[in-house]
Amino acid sequence: MTRGRLHLNAFLMNTGHHEASWRLPESDPYASVDLAHYVRLARIAERGTFDSLFLADGPQLWSSVAQRPAGALEPITLLTALATATEHIGLIATASTSYNSPYNLARKFATLDHISGGRAGWNIVTTAGAEAARNFGLDAEPAHAERYARAAEFLDVALKLWDSWEDDTVVADKAAGVWGDDAKIHPPRHKGRYFSVEGALNVPRSPQGYPLLVQAGSSEDGKRFAARYAEAVFTAQQTVEDARAFYADLKARTVAAGRDADHIKVLPGIVPVIGSTEAEARAHERVLEDHIVHTHGVRHLERLLHLEPDTLDLDGPLPADLPPESAIEGAKSRYTLIVELARRDRLTVRQLIGRLGGGRGHLTFAGTPEQVADTIQLWFESGAADGFNIMPAVLPSGLEAFVDHVVPLLRARGLLRTEYGARTTLRQRYGLPRPANQHVTAPALV
Image 1 (cartoon, rainbow, N blue to C red):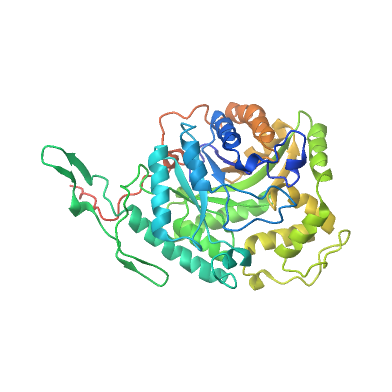
Image 2 (cartoon, rainbow, N blue to C red):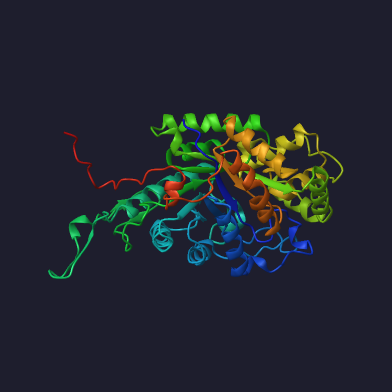
């Protein structure tokens, strides 16, 4: 595999990833529904020559509205607006295979890819949680394996839909009165376990062919799915050793699935809290921790760990008899990461809530720009990452600090581009080929 340069993705979340970020004097509690706020963030990330930006999403109200800003604009709609306010940066939206239909979602992503000139990406999620299930007429969430089986068929149908137009279907022959070639339309006529989809997409094949396919599950089912389909993987790892192991495992699975290991990029999340000195960075971190409302954190942790209310003692450890990952039907890998973090570092519930407040299990790092750059370089050069999902604790200030002070160091070390250059699509920026249409046979070599 070639190392190339770092891939950076800006994970944008209203006032920042830290749950108490909205309480700071600089923060706008209404930013989550303010288009101007997101335009500003997108332009900051573009100034830092990030490959892409990313919006998380779920078809349910997240957490308690008392805890943090819980409103979220629908991401594909928001990214369509951001496409007109930016020129280069990729635009990745989260969308669920559990609570969407392939035709509508394939159409939306093809539309975003056309509007943005080839900058669309899809973060594919299967959506855990009974709350979302009940919003769609179900009594409980489908089993973990069932969600991934549905996701695999969903992806197969979406790929058929994106390939239902050949690239040269439109001939636009005004003299002959022929706009397109019907012989180059290929209806999926799919009938499977979960979906029945007859007709071709009503959007021509988009600039990238398919959007960049991103995935975030790190369970066994998630890794099998990623090895088959994903081109970028967002993951949460607490140590460089764990990150190396995950990286090697996923690359090996990808090769075993018949794909090039360079065609899947592993991007762990990192929550950088930056100060001009280490002491200043730690002080910023303490201010955020001091603004955590622990009663909110306890309730959230009890839900995540499938515990009855009032089970946890703030100043005690996690219960010794927590269920194993195999008994969890929700977010399996995140459950295991949090339990292992608490056990390994012997954290009280209060301390665990503090650790999770910034990144919900992602690596949180407080330090100088040089220390942040050193950490990124170490993980990248030691085979733990192809790049990073940058998750600023506070927005916009945390993203500005990263772009103004860490990005120049990464550029000086030859790890990051200084300009976008001739590669215009998101796939090109990630070093990925444009997929051939499955209905077109490549010419024989002579």
